[in-house]
Length: 122
Image 1 (tube, rainbow, N blue to C red):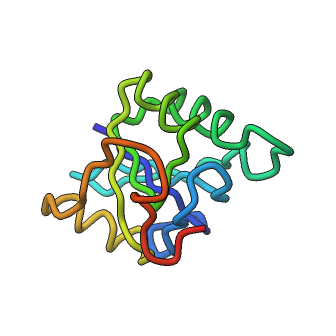
Image 2: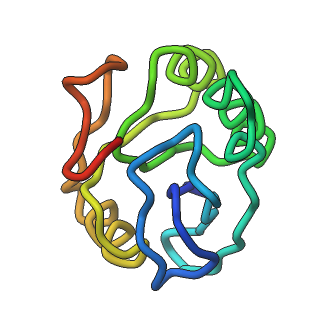
């Protein structure tokens, strides 16, 4: 199993980025082994449609779940159609987010929108 975390940097010590569509990287990680890779998010520099571009790129990575702070409606729809479970976390390191995920402490996001914004989200 592989999950993805939106991140500001390329390793597990990087901060989780609360934005999905315009995060710098997706950290793709196996929660059991903690083996990971950082993937550039093509949505970060998009003039428009960043969420959709990011969602399409994320689905292609083969992850089963996404952890982020906020997921807008367009990205949410694409991810949901792709069978991706979306979880919400507050800003902390990717490693801390991963630990909360393993303990089952993250809330699954069932609808897009402002009600799902995490601490510090934009």
